[in-house]
Length: 596
Ligand SMILES: Cc1cc2nc3c(=O)[nH]c(=O)nc-3n(C[C@H](O)[C@H](O)[C@H](O)COP(=O)(O)OP(=O)(O)OC[C@H]3O[C@@H](n4cnc5c(N)ncnc54)[C@H](O)[C@@H]3O)c2cc1C
Image (cartoon, rainbow, N blue to C red):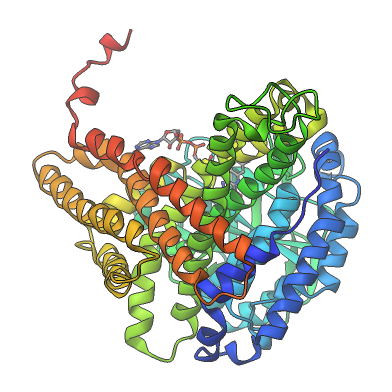
């Protein structure tokens, strides 16, 4: 069974040397307390919690799963989960970045990014229990009424209650416009919520005294489609306007799903039978409020992808160093042993380096997105906030989809490196492959992220976020143009960014004549964008090694991994570019009947 070691050196490199968060935090509201000492202490303690408390529960949780007691409609989490959650609360982790007035520590959002990575690398299923509390508290903070904030936020921030996000219904997943759950207004200002939601993460569990569901439903006179959806807060135990918890609400878990992976994360069918709920934000504008929650959740799921890449890399690297099979083609590297370790073979190195390149590049990209959240929420400069917001909207679908797709690719490599031993349960890597599979599906599938990126974030805004990002890359290339250590990366990066802009224009023009062009290009466009974005962060990583206090070995490894990325991953953009340029014909000409 694999052990987990928090990659603190690289986390510190990305935060302090690459993103320079220390000086950035000092400019932001609430950031003045986020000194280097404080962040270092948080990282050390988070690493200890992840390695010693959560990681040992990962395989056992997968074996045990969650159990629904149908008589009481309650869910028992696997052994040890409850105690680990209690330690999480005692450690103050749940309120790390929440406002002080609700009991949080108000540290910048981006300090939450490494915490999320560490928890999920150690135990993705466990990490799903507190996951949606963050988004629920953000939605309440930004869109809730004062009494709702007072009544609900403190217990959520303190971790005594967790949040859920109830969107999906059996006939309505990606297309929320189809949802049918109803909300009837009551004389006291509350609503009665009726409907069945499926696939609800942490919809029922035994970790906390209350669970707060954020539910999308329709008012009686609501217009059809997405313009008629409202957001409601529906607690498992009713909560009055002074925040006191009362009797059981009529919402219950009817069944739990039996899944391919994340078996210890409970996925519930939730029945709302005239449950008491309260409207959050304006009527029929629920999707807008829910987007607040979805954005944080999408970034968090991108970080889940990163977490799994790192975990699979660590396991397969240890195995590749240990397992002896065949001799190196260029002569024995360990003549005293009966064979050489796997790590001498070129294709094993390809699979290891692919994982390393996605883990470290993905960390830079994911944490970068989190620093944009800091600026959006805490900068005193309105122009800076607006730019960061546009940039964040643009990068979120890339972070979510690219890192989760890469997690699946990397999990495949990790299992492959273990050979047959990877396919059996004992070594633990097959769990990472099963757990990774959901990450490209929930919180909006890869296809939905791709349509969001190309359709909404690029075409509908005339590419404002893309423009900011390209300007940022261009400024970097310009600043590093004379740096001999960077020359090998700057030229291909500049070529790729120009092609990115050209491709966007080409697709935009073709889409004017044929709207299917967007759907035909979207996923390739997303991968293309992601690979170029990672190239930028790899070039920045090399630049950041100059002046970094990391060891010479660490810096040399960054340079060599960057070279691998540019030689063997960035060229994938060419397949995607060619595919996008092929247009819709090869996809759309075949008739329904011709599919067979
Ligand atoms: C373990 C688990 C946990 C979950 N947790 C939650 C939760 O907490 N709360 C919640 O509300 N939901 C949750 N979900 C639901 C999840 O968000 C949905 O499964 C997801 O949004 C996809 O919806 P669907 O399954 O209905 O697929 P569909 O929407 O039916 O899509 C099927 C396929 O078609 C593709 N597709 C759809 N439309 C298009 C298009 N226009 N172009 C191209 N491709 C398209 C999709 O990408 C997908 O591949 C969870 C699901 C699972 C399995």
